[in-house]
Length: 255
Image (cartoon, rainbow, N blue to C red; front, top):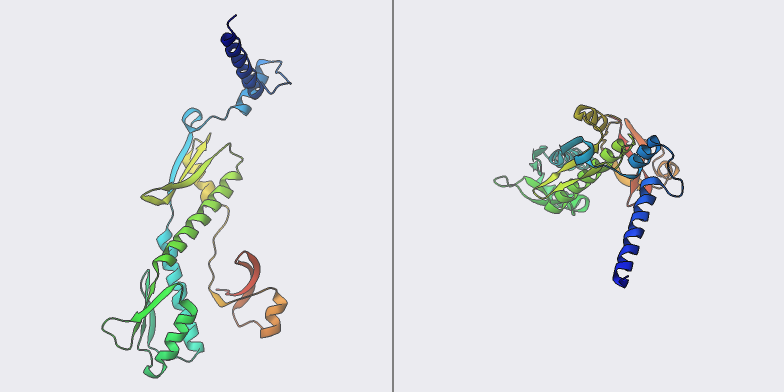
């Protein structure tokens, strides 16, 4: 026999054994048709195109997260200005990425600028308001917007994956859509034929709660905070969180 034919025959034989191993679970071979079907279903994972199921495209409202950051900054800046006795007429959100501070006391402009620079230098740009010599505009930096959007997408992916994985589904697909649809998530659930059921699982199982951080400083323990402050401010509580990958405690608004 031609040596090349021998090697080809051996290769084909090895491939067949390899397939049998993964299909039937060698060395325990099935003894009935039911076991063959069971092994086949366990070893071969059918995708959405063969098994059928649900294909969803979910849009993440990243712009709402940006607006929430602006609203939070308005509240935080108002509190800071009052605590420093810096006089002004109004702090308000102009749009999702701009804040207007009206009529800052002329004798406190330097103090105001220093405070804003110290607290928000890496997130907000400060400039005089157009047509208002005593007003100032804070503009959310593009890098900060991108970071908020990326963080929102990451949290959304993790939340959806956690809820879908709790169903024990086989190889679901949960991934960003990408391209011009960067704020959309593709969810493919083989074997789930009812889209309403899938949406119910994704939307249920928890509620995201946002709270205003009253004190931006974090503390390694409750005792460390109480050693410096003795008592908590009214309508606040001390909660656990993370800061740069470390466990930390922070003061948040109860409302």
